[in-house]
Image (tube, rainbow, N blue to C red; front, side, top):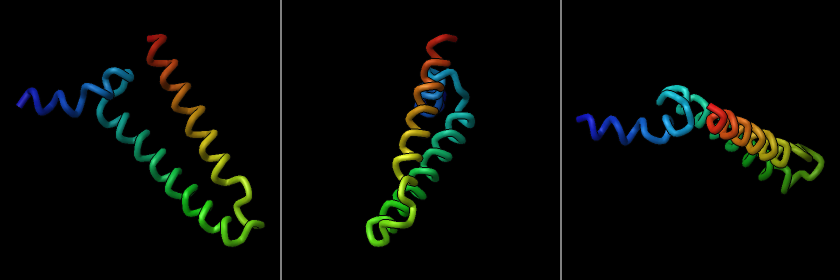
Length: 75
């Protein structure tokens, strides 16, 4: 049973997070990227709509992941 628990907690712990902290952040990024993907598809049809939504989201997610990674390294 302890081995099963470790499967879920090892990666979050390497990032200095609990399982639920990691789940919250990963889900947030997933929802943001899903919206971004839908915006990109709409933008492909209507180029005047969501002109920078996908790239703005990609930059935001990347910056946030890098910030969290640097925070966990510093700890």
